[in-house]
Length: 179
Image 1 (cartoon, rainbow, N blue to C red):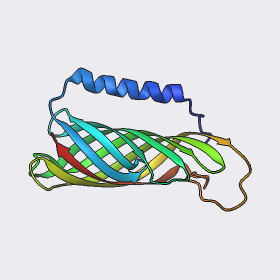
Image 2 (cartoon, rainbow, N blue to C red; image 1 turned 90 degrees about the horizontal axis):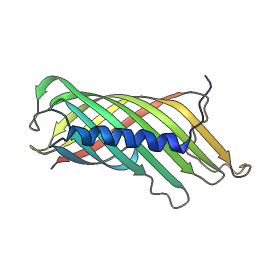
Image 3 (tube, rainbow, N blue to C red; image 1 turned 120 degrees about the vertical axis):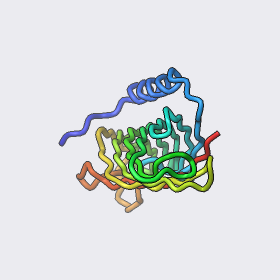
């Protein structure tokens, strides 16, 4: 399968559209999030509850590397279903679908990826307004672009997805707090 090259204008347009949808809805229950995962990396985010079962979120993430400039932007939709309701008035199990943009300005190249990840996860309440979410599932590389700075033969690690596959594992842990 051939990947489509990424254009930063399309990425910006994508996030402007997602933000517009959220603000037009005028939601009253924002959630602040902090988490770690693939492809979100170490991230901060905001989520908006449409009701107790449907949530939309945006996050920005990076790594703590001094040698590389890595950025992750992600938009996600969550649907809670099944099982018992927890203290936060959410059903414990959720389905998550996310679209993301991952950019790495590494040692020898600049890599850009468009991702689609699908997860199933579990919501654990720590109280009425606070909880932890754990999710796992597949991640698909739907677009990619790489610019070589120079030939890299020294074995330096880059965050590039070069295995030839378009499917990778996606996993995440998130702490949320409802404002």
